[in-house]
Image (cartoon, rainbow, N blue to C red; front, side, top):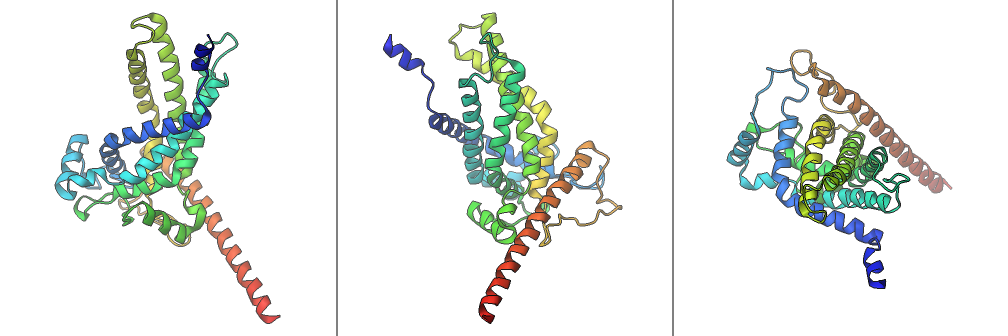
Length: 314
């Protein structure tokens, strides 16, 4: 009896974080080419009305072919290193936090059954925490995946060489706040995605187990629940994903202004698409926050120089 009780005890919080991060990083090895294709297609036609830009990637299979032909097969794994680190930190924190909430009973009602509203809230909170932690890695990942030869380039080209160089350059130019540039788009993206994924997975699995389609301990219950959850996540998360990708990849000048500085009404303005309008709103919020960080950094530097001048005069 004692041995059974020990086996039923929940794993420690550290193990939950590590297992969640490692499992997601393993999956990232296989899904990264899809992320490269997704990033290129989401940046295609940025800030331009339909028909006023060259369509380099017609669909997902054409994008795979085009990237491999022009950039080489290895380009399909662009941004792999920051992608793995992002998966480890973001999903480690996200899945680990959700499991902690579940172990504490936050996702269940008074009757002990899984509560859908509580699962949504716990999933959203866990996703928000994970997105904030992994944001710097996602920024560099997106910028590396967007890099392409001039013939098929879309979006701003940052010219990074790797994770360390990308992070160090960002920190050198914009300070610690610049490392989290774009997080305003990532928070709603991962929050919405996590809330739907984690809540629908829990409720779907509980429903499938109760219907007894498969044996209660069968892995097919989790597989079917994951498929249902994945479809719902894709439907709700894609608009936020487009906005997030464009925020992370946009160019920023020394004053924290995004490129292009002024919309050109002859083809480079925002289109009437809801995604571009939403991107415009979120980008303004993000750029304003970055400008504040840059101003604070300059003020801090000027205060330091004033102190040094006073010491020198004394």
